[in-house]
Length: 252
Image 1 (cartoon, rainbow, N blue to C red):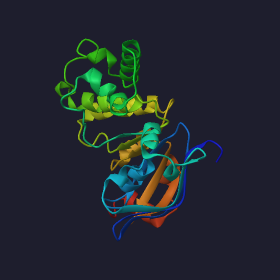
Image 2: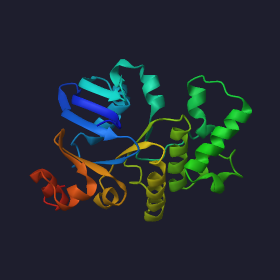
Image 3: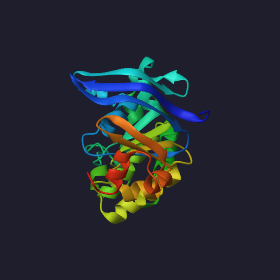
């Protein structure tokens, strides 16, 4: 696939002796929104974290196989560089509690020792908050703490913080599971808009969400990639019996 941005071949992951990702091979097209689904404990979150090497923060984690960002091997790159190119947003909104909204957005630059002028900082903050559909709500309170925001606003702030570093790929691990339906809808609308600029991979338990927003869906089962196809195709005519059983509620 010529327009692939992430590729992996025979990719495996363990925590100690426990294998949680088993021989996954897939290609993720650029500027697509990919949903990753499957029962609890099927390896989907571990696989997501492997894409930007966040799993390495857990003791005894190891991988085998190959994974690329374009033509660069992710596991041959410095992990900090990988995480600059592949941003991540977690399940629960986690703005830095002692930082203002403004400082949260540019935290990645400070943490990585990247010097910016005030004009550059101001431009990045406004641009990132606009892209996260949050600017108009917070532009007059940029120096208040991010924790004063609502849950949905905090999650959009975390998305702004991720895209401030100008990544190629955004990974999201169940980003709306802690949010109310209205906030969930605003995040979904935001992700559909953001895929024009970024490639997005989202882990979700919510099949309706996957159907609403994703172009393709990957279904994981017991660490294996059971099926990966256009979302509409998978939800209407799955090829794998395990996918069909999951979609029809025969197991969860």
